[in-house]
Image (cartoon, rainbow, N blue to C red):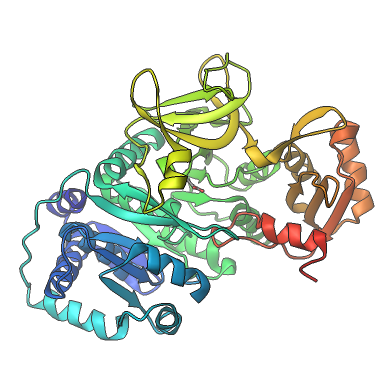
Length: 494
Ligand code: ASP
């Protein structure tokens, strides 16, 4: 993976590489910082295969540290700064790092979670700067394609986080395939609002490096500054999740005109409702809104070709070039086009498994009995159309039967988001504790919401319970926090 940065440094040393709230580094500066950090790591005795846990904000330093760790063949383990000591304890126990790095906001929590010494940024970074000024040498050890580049802990809200093992080969393949499928350009400015502890954020750093364009890290900016920042930096590509898209639309409504030169919004993690896509297009004329589907376990699985962004509403596109999507029934046999089954990904993007977690690895990563190829059983359901475009139907838990109808929370949420005035929606399937329920963030009464839904859905699909919230609980990555919503419904969160 570090070949990417060396290549960019050689070809475009003076091009802007990474910008954050404090400034910008060119590819030459980024590469020099990454070598200095690699040297710092090796001076500390970090060797190939050692894990380095970092609980830091997403800024230029973290990008340099990522590339620096890759150079040493060390395993970069970025954790969300908001992860609490409870999960940190489990994660550090699982990762068994050679080094743990924190800053003034996280070092105390980390110290609560482990007896290992915590390296603090305030002391560490001046050292790295000193090594950089000395132009300290570092000889890259031989790093092999199956060496692990990074462990990405998925943010389980109740279950303990699991780490997806991401080797250099898979990461390099996904980076190239994605830049190709999305058509990233060397003059792009990609504004990334997501932390590097989520792969949606992490790959922005790699994809921009692969085409030698600029990434703007805006994780720490306040939501209210988002649009201003996009204009200021001239953002051309902006990755979104629904909550961020809604915020952006609200900001654009308040401050119309003079929009940033955005040519492409991308979406994954949770699907943008059609109504949000339409409003985005109205505020950013000419911008494409590219739908995608992915799981950290294979990085990204499908991408809608950007030039087809208005076609096949509801589809999340085609498999990454060089990969395949299968739709399998309960017995593992392929179902005909148009029929719903489990989404299974095959190809060089499929990761080897979860770190030190054989049980979950065996469930999700299985071998094709016919070809011996490893494939990822996503646990998500969907269908392919006759041309091989994927339509996501929901997770296994999102699909249920009610009053004799098969349905998915996804279609109920989509109908809710079509109602003017609803800013967020999450449906919970019926359980033994409650009937089909819908949570919305809106200025409408529950009665008005149900009435609007009855105009859009068959009677069996209209939720029996509707709760209106003023603020929606979100996970660290901006997805709906379903577990918290379920607690609200059971009354156990009261
Ligand atoms: N890995 C996914 C993607 O980039 C995002 C996710 O797992 O939520 O498509």
